Amino acid sequence: MKQERTMGPWVLGTVLGLISLFGLFMASHATDDIFYGTGLFFTGVGVVLIFYLIHRHTSGGDHG
Image (tube, rainbow, N blue to C red; front, side):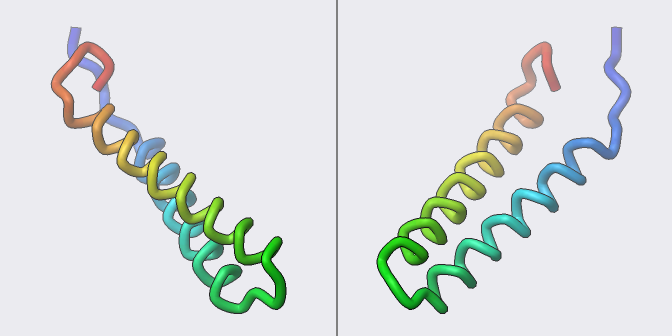
């Protein structure tokens, strides 16, 4: 059974990209270490999840 492609992964990827950019903006304008670390955390999580999303949809497995 062929799976129908939807807009969901595109929307999720866009949101994750925006979260990553927000994290970079937050880290670059940080006034203390907490904001800097939080910004880097948002960026790191966003990038890792984007790569996971790419892997999930290009691996050729049953789920994408």
